[in-house]
Amino acid sequence: MVDVAEHDDGRTTVTARASGLQATFTFEPLEDGYRYRQEGDAGPFETMETTLTRERADSGARLTARSSVSLGLPLPGVTDRLAGWKRRGELKRLLETLAVELR
Image (cartoon, rainbow, N blue to C red):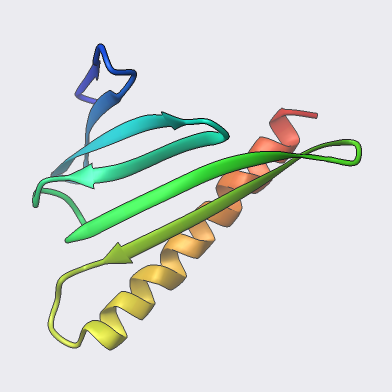
């Protein structure tokens, strides 16, 4: 992580760097969770937005993660499907980790 900035309107901006690549993400609270997206054109994606929401369930809560992603490369049907497949794996690991940590 390079920088974290909290804004008066409740948003948080995080700038991160890994493998020589730097990207900025904005996190916004929602009534039932959070939304975050990559800002600008610097980063691994042309666009990326994810929402994490929670709702009450019988004995706890149900967490849902949804994301849209585009790499902005030639052959978007192929490259964006690949990016979506990778993103699904990342979100699955996130939800599995949260389930273990919150028990």
